[in-house]
Amino acid sequence: MMGNNRRRIGMVVGLVVIGASALAAGAAAAVAGYKARYTGGTIAAIPLKCSGYFNLEDEQAVRFVFGIDAQANLIDQADSLPRRAWERLKRPAKYEIQTEVRRRPENIKDIKVIEREFQNIRLRSEDVASFAYSPTACQKTYRIVVVRKNLSIEKGARCLFDDIRYFFYITNDRESKAAEIVFEANARCNQENLIAQLHGTHATRMPVDTLLSNWAYMVMASLAWTLKAWFALLLPERGRWREKCKQEKLQVLRMEFRTFLNAFMRVPAQVVRTGRRIVFRLLSWNPGSTCSCVAWSSSRDHCEADSEVLKPG
Image (cartoon, rainbow, N blue to C red; front, side):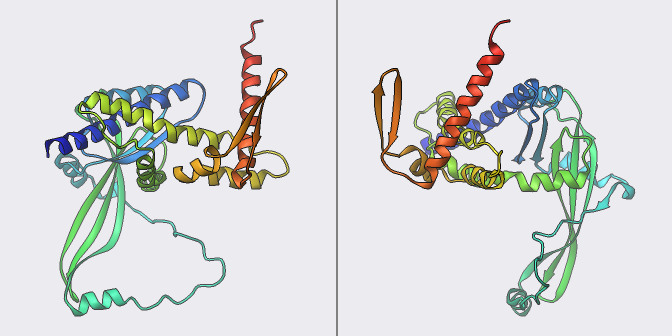
């Protein structure tokens, strides 16, 4: 039992440190002239180590959006906001109707809930606001975006009472609208699917018994997924087949890790040394082979361009 708990604690610490490492990498990207923005899940508290990376990101103009637990002090500040600070949150439609509006089928589930007098929580409306907040472990003041969900607790066809629940997001983006911050945090790049893919790379396994060693193993194993993403980003989007190349790039970027292995890595090939060249002969062909050749050519062009820039004089 203690071994399982140790593994769970190690995985949590490893995920926190990986997130902090990602924030530091974002700062380096900002120094290099790239724009970086991070979104993540909800954090129950802000550790002292992560708070230092928050301050670093703010200095390097890297933007982040993270969910934060609904703590008592945050709820008190949300309750004390004036009425004019709140505005109605209108969420965009999930999809655009291409043909004509169809009549929705009868909701059998709601009918059964009312007939059997089950307790039900119904969302009536949502409001959004923002205020300044300085976490205890941080040196600076950040922006808290709060969503107030106006709920009604029902039992059968009767409304028992009204309820209010808050959801908080911490960010250093002080320019975007509060609603835009909420939509971005809700999207958050399918992080659950990313964690599932890390299972495929065995990055969430805890093979040793110390937190530091498990963290190092998790970082090294997660590099496999990072290399897969870098491979997809190397695919160019230019020329007459720009739209097709863009779709292929998006497909590789969203590809599961096991599918990526079978399509790009586990390909039989023959290595031939001839003259001053090394020739790789593919002994089989699949749809991913074309992307492999394009990515190889693109990486070679990038290396040649970088070598030209780094030449002295």
